[in-house]
Image (cartoon, rainbow over all chains, first blue to last red):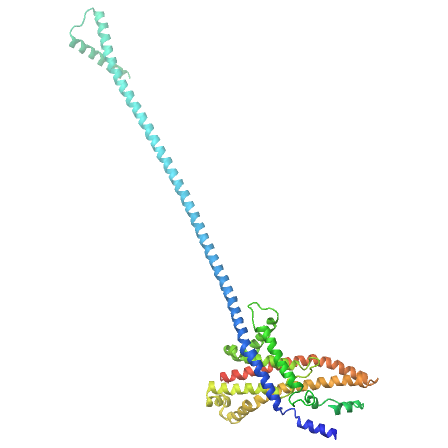
Length: 181
Length: 264
């Protein structure tokens, strides 16, 4: 009797036939979860995940930018450094050239000065010599005349004659001097 | 139930049958619907809501605690179920898919949680709720995105086949898509939970009967086997419970994706 009742109950409770009240309860439960989890909460976590992705990507972008900037600055410094080096080399070269030029100029000047001094000395000597000769000539003339006057005992009064004699004498003297030389 | 216990007390081992899924109202005079599966269904829904609320109510950019677990679940459903079938539409359907996944998963886990020990989805009404929801969405989206005629044409006459094949193909596809798909969608989940619970109940009652109710030298080893098998099958059942929740959600995504884009 009880067994038959159980069998009958089991027959009524075919596991493949849903109970209406379970459908209603399940539907309401699912609706509740869908509203709370799906409609309210899922958008929030989606927003946060999107923000996180953005933040990470932004961070990466920022790091890349910083690196690029550092690279650019480094390149700039390197350029400046090499420029400075070239400039220094150029200045050194210029200085060397200038030094050489100055040296050459100084040498030139010194040589010119020496030449000028030597020439001036030559001219002086020449002039002195000429003057000495002229003086000597006059002196010798006078002495010779005196001497000759004394020797012959008479004064050679005729001035013109006297001079002619002296000149002739001197010319002869010079001529013999030259010949001797 | 009472009949069975009485029979068992007589000394004869009685294997548990489908009647273990029948639950009387919670107390005498309670309405018919107020029984264990109904309570578990509501409690499960509330737990899912509370869990999701703790995890996602105020999400932080740097996740902590429960949010980590919640995000793990979210990204699992998104990457394993939604994206393979929905592509760029994945985010839009995540509210539905995540709700389905979390609720089914917890309802399944109730089968191995001590004291509760009843997978809610072993009552077919609950899988039917999910399957019907997905089915309605599938038909609606199919007609909306492919046109009333286009949807059925794409369904029944996938291009690139010899004409003669369509004679066989068209009705099969129609039945497969409109009748069999939602049916198997619900029944797969239901049957797995139903059978799993039955198996656990069987081994548990073997162990209980031969180790406690009728301890005999001959029966004790059998009782031990029942006990060990209960433990092993509980582990296996946890895996199945997770797998079925995952599979159900994945199929839901597949049906929705198939309606959004005629891919065959």
